[in-house]
Image: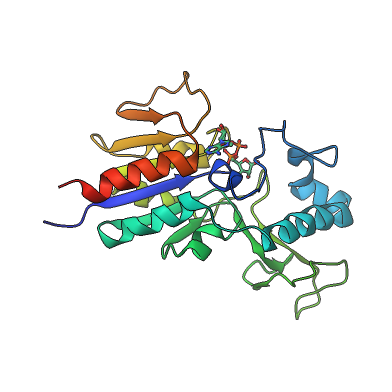
Length: 231
Ligand code: APR
């Protein structure tokens, strides 16, 4: 029988149990700044130092974070299913857990790029970015992150991937931020949609959605065990 296709759509809740804070659980504040006020092109033009400090802090935190049991359990799916991870997270915990197909919708914290030529991408220096760190053409390096209001280059690929899914696992996202959150409406009729999140989702109007109101480590463990033993 042909292998089924599973797509995982993850958000900040996926990494919460790795010690990386979510955006909206602590009302999205960082050092008294609203994330929406720092993760924007306007903030970058207004105060590059503030934006670099924000991402250098998050990058430093990521260096000490480890994949949690939910990241590791998802890797097991690859033995039996075509598995693609589509994540809003900018951490590399899915990759470090061993997932082989990961699409980052909002960029990657471990990378930086030229503020002018977006094709010039390199690893983020371990001690972070400073003003004056430039690309070979002499332009300032910036975080390789999709800021609010910027295009989401991987969105089309993500939509096509969800449209081919037989099963869609939505893990740890408040489904607040578009266009990413729109992915759950891209699933074809009959796709089984499982939402794993301890929060309440009364407003969700998605057909065939089964909500496991548990943490990622608990809920993913249960779902993966079931999917690996389904006939
Ligand atoms: N396990 C699973 N889910 C959890 C856990 C946990 N241990 N703890 C919290 N959650 C859930 C919350 O209930 C919430 O639904 O994770 C979700 C986190 O939501 P947000 O903080 O809004 O994160 P996310 O949905 O990923 O935000 C999307 O917004 O700030 C931008 O670009 C940023 O990618 C981010 C986007």
